[in-house]
Image (cartoon, rainbow, N blue to C red; front, side, top):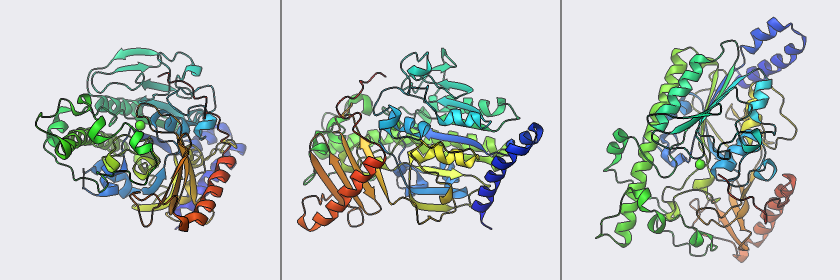
Length: 493
Ligand SMILES: [Ca+2]
């Protein structure tokens, strides 16, 4: 049985019937629209999810349930690997240069958003936890106050791990406890208290495992003696690369500070031993934060099961981007390299996806909004730039699916990462550091860890020419006219 055909047929039926049926019958149909629980953590990378990388670093049995019972996307990529911009891309279905959020500026909430479209489609909508799209205080939609949400209860700015302040519909108060637990409690409350007659859309957004990785005590203790295996590229010396990696200030050995490692290193350590100590301390706390997320995702999934909601609820697990866990001597994200570019994307939808489906197709965070609108039978606005990935949920990739993606990072920001844009195809990656006027080219088939920059290799000249043509074609198609190249809005969060 072709489940996608059923899904498409159902969605078409909803759209068609709603035009002709009386209101009471429409209500009965809308009650069958799928609910959506959109779970997004902050900086949780695929290397720290066992569904992707096995138990090498950590076991995440609850997050893995979504892969076992649904689909795992192996090539989900972010279009601008940084927190606030990625969230804005997801909510608008537009790239940074068109949604007004290229860096850590706020989202103008007067523009059309996924949340508003879902409200129009009859959904009860909520966002709980990390928002990070508003100015301090965010009293108006223009200042990044959540819009299109019937209920919101979010952290101001980055939020705190312990006893955080939360802003509930414009009223701030301190909440006692650990952020990951609190957000999950409030997500379950939202599910319990929602109006029963409407389908719902819940964004359940974690603060963890964002820097500076403050774990709950039970998980901190669990990982305190763990010595994580080192990535193969831990001692990358950047030979043959552009200057960008050297200029960045996100190196394990020289940039992790005492706030990150929760104390000064032992005085007798230096060189490789000191680097290893810093790596251990960073990773122990990062993984312990992830363990809390996994535990709480399990609580929410159990609630969906016990309440009978699981069958008709789309559950998505993702993060706003990937993250380096020591690869290339880095922590943090921003670069177009694989660990930072790739985001987790797991989706369970019993009525639309077979268990243990895997897709290798290239999907992007800009696809999330159009995909969810398609899933609920709503029209996709013509100005959204992403594509619905619904046709991929069967595990098959249509011939017409994209074979390349466009990426752009704007801001040197806290970690002095040089601005760059580039293209990734299924095999190659070409990156242009536009402020440095330097290029990098990688063959991901022969060099998946991106250690050998092939740009400048004369035998690759024809390939470079072809990739440049594709890069600038995509740039033009997506209407990137360097809107923010020289006039980036200042950080205001
Ligand atoms: Ca992030």
